[in-house]
Length: 385
Image (tube, rainbow, N blue to C red):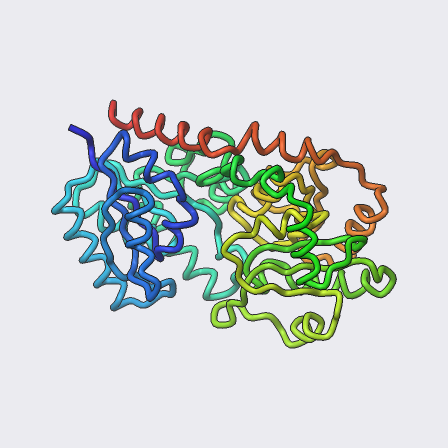
């Protein structure tokens, strides 16, 4: 009889995207149940059908909401007592805190939480103190913590959130790796289709295309990106900046000046949210990703698998995926001038890179099967404890 594992995220979009394919893979070895909140798109049903695992809806908020959080903990506790899982494994901050507390009280022997980023790193004052406290609570109730990068591992120790014996990085890092067959430039070899997409976006065949993929929010470095490109575009009329992503005005809005640059510069093209970002990678020349903080950014791995070099900031995750001078370059955080200079080097070919090497590094270190096998080995080892 298979042992039971319950995987928990705050919102179902994380189950659908962050753990794509992983639940189905694990279901060949364990009875897997996926838990997350309800949503208007009925994503839990889609996850269940695609991953071939049962899903259960327990609402959780992304913000700190004490009464609602207590209700969520109680519902999770009741579920864990009923199902008696061998492992509860959570992702995303709120799901981690609530499910680790509930699993501890329910007597779950192995309470695992994956850290894919620390939003608290950009917080200050009372908010930082509160977030630090919540983080420590999560780690205290968990039996193991899996940072998805070595940078996060070191930060967790520096912040004294927990001790070394509770920490481990699976494989080379990343929560789920990259589907390198899906993210492959060979899938987009149709020249006519690429030309048609460029035409729709008002991109000339001779244009040099910088691309950003992700949420259009302040802590992704969008302010610095648009400031750098505003300067760059004044002297390089054949350059375009392609923004693929949506705003998140409630949690992390952009300031008015940044929005004005976006709206008034004809060389900046914003597509909005895209279900499939691969066609945009296929028509781009380089990824610009000046984020302030990350866990282990999928977009940088996706771009690399599509043979794109990347300009990234010197933060954990990014500075592990990118090797200076091989598949991209690394710049300081919050530095529009450094970003502009890096753009100039890539444009002028003074920064040399090998597009094939960009993909090779991702395939070798971060393809999904490597991550899945590493996690499966970890689960199997827990069976012997």
